[in-house]
Image 1 (cartoon, rainbow, N blue to C red):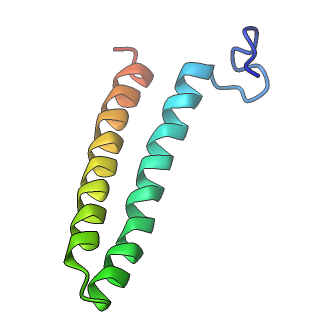
Image 2 (cartoon, rainbow, N blue to C red):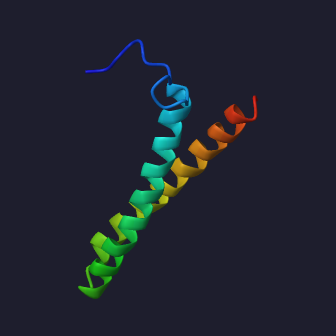
Length: 78
């Protein structure tokens, strides 16, 4: 259930900025986790799965970069 009234009073950070911070952290955390999964797949010589995880990792990194750019612009007032 989502609230239509919370605007950052609880955290001191407006929801849209907090949500963006969370998104960037989640993307970066996912990229880091996928590194372990890639190594596991490579250890098992499963290139198909390793390639899938590499693609997912690249997508997570891309999402983090886009999110960081948006966050930077918004926090700088742009």
